[in-house]
Amino acid sequence: MTYSDRAQIALNLGGLIADGFIAVEAKDGQQVKNIGSDILKLGKALGVSEQLLGRGNSINEFAEHNDWDTLQEELEATQNEVKSSMQSHADQDLVILVTLGGWIRGTQVVTGVIMKNYSESAATVLRQPALVRFMQSKVNEISPELRQQPLVKDVSEQLTGIEKLVSFPEDRIPTQEQVKKVNDAVSKLMKEIESKEPAK
Image 1 (tube, rainbow, N blue to C red):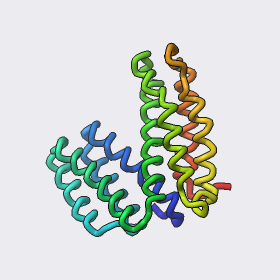
Image 2: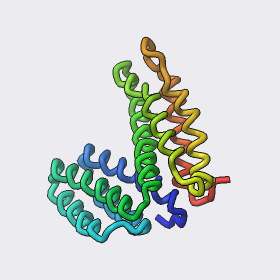
Image 3: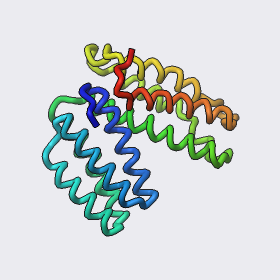
C-alpha cells in the first residue's frame, strides 16, 4: 500500500477492485473487508472523495451481515465513485489505468481458474483481441508525460504481446497451453504492477 507513483497506485487500485468482486462471488466476508480497506487507502492516496469513507463502512457492514447482493452493488458504487471523483479532478488518465489494472487482474484470475479446470467453453472467453486493442488505444490517449513513465510504458508494450495471445481464430478453441501463455503474460505484468521496485 506504500506506492508513491500515481500511475502504479491507479493500476493496483484496479486490481484490488477486481479482487473485491471475486471475494464477493466467493462470499468471503473477511477478505471483502480487507480489500475494502485497501481500496480506501489507495483511493485516498490518489486524492479521491471523502465519500469513499462512508462506502468503506458500508462494505464492512454488509460483509459482517453476509448481505452479498447489496455488497456487490456497494462495490460497484465504490468503483464508480472512485472513477467519477477522479474525473472531476481531471484525472482521466488514472481512470484508464484503474480500468486496465482491473482487466489485467481479472484475466489473471480467469486464466488461472481455466488452467485448473480446463473446458473448451470456458476457454473461449479468452478471445478478446478487440477489447485489448481498445484498452491499448485508451492508453495511447494518456498524457505523453504519464505515458513515458517506465511502468506505464512497460504495461503498454506488453499489452501488444497479450493482444496476440488472445487473438485466437474464430474457429479455434484455445488449448490449455495457450491459456497458460496468457496466464504467464498477465501474471508477469501483475507482478510488475505490484512490485515496490521501480520498472527499468
